[in-house]
Amino acid sequence: MIIRKLKKYLAVALAGVMTLSLVACGSGNDKGEETTKASMETSTEYVAQNVKVAAMKGPTAIGMVKIMQDNKEGKAANKYGFTIAASADVFTSSLIKGDVQLAAVPCNVASTLYNKSGGKIKVVGINTLGVLYIMENSYTTSAITSVSDLKGRTIYLTGKGTTPEYTMRYLLKSAGLDPDKDVKLEFKSEASEVATAMMISGNSTVVGMLPQPYVTTVTMKDSMMRVALDVTKEWEKLNGADNTVVTGVLVANADYYDKNKVVVDKFMEEYEASVNYVNSNVDAAAQLVEEAQIFKADVAKKAIPECNITLIKGNAMKTKVSNYLKVLYDENPNAIGGKMPDDGFYVTE
Image (cartoon, rainbow, N blue to C red; front, side, top):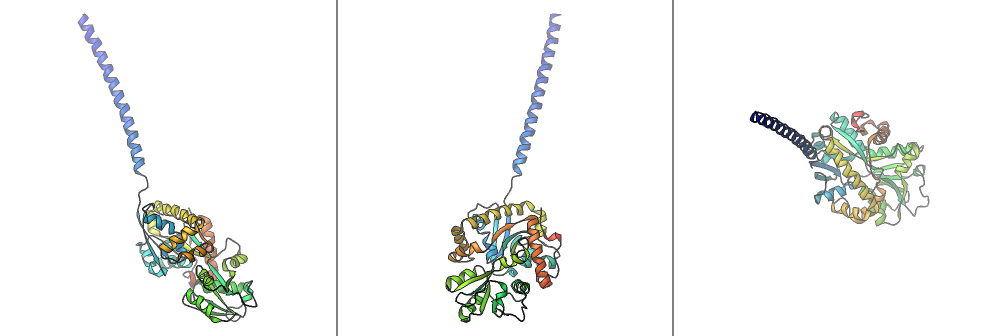
């Protein structure tokens, strides 16, 4: 009888032990699941990607020089391959095909590419505002203080049939001048030719419209040359700050953007930091500009504060770009690819 009771107690005790063991195992599984979940979350941390980036050799490339330096030192978020070219034509076909994923291009070029490719690029931000300036010889007896003062002048400029010409014509007409009668527009193939023509003309009625950093180059070589008008300020006098000159934009291959938004966002974070660095550390940034073979450091040092390097995104970007393109469209639809781009052109989220 006693033995029978002992067996019963042992059976109950054994069942209790087994129950406790099962509970303990279950608790261990919960912890294991939590550990696995934490591990999975850790595994979703950003992984560097190979990204090809292109820009023109000028102000539109200056804003990214800190990223270029970080990339050399292995500190960038991605593994970037940079192309800095004299003309956007060098890389636009690669951008459309997706061989180049991100690029800095003139605003009207971006619109033209979008329209002609059927929407194969997107603009993700403004990276450069106005860089054009009207210059004159400072010894002239009749100094230029407004656009209307250009009447009767010979104006040297680049870009026949492109943005500089349409910008000049717009400003002249807004000041009540006839671009074909009241002034003489003398086109040169390169900004350096405009600078040379101004300096050797010996004619006090000659003026030139130049972009930075060529403005700086001219003033460094000839102290008698001065900036008469800031084209951006003259434009904004007519339209307000929301309708300003937009020189350059950052664009992405549309298919790449749709599939790799997180990569583009990471680049934009780095670009914003780079812009802030360039604008806040001009001396150091000028050295990086020279190392990137964009301009000499002494020129870059004086030019950077006048280059309007920036980063404007979202709806503010869309407003400024669309307003600027509308002015160019009204001057000549071909300047932006024949029509105003639709909403698919803009990344606003």
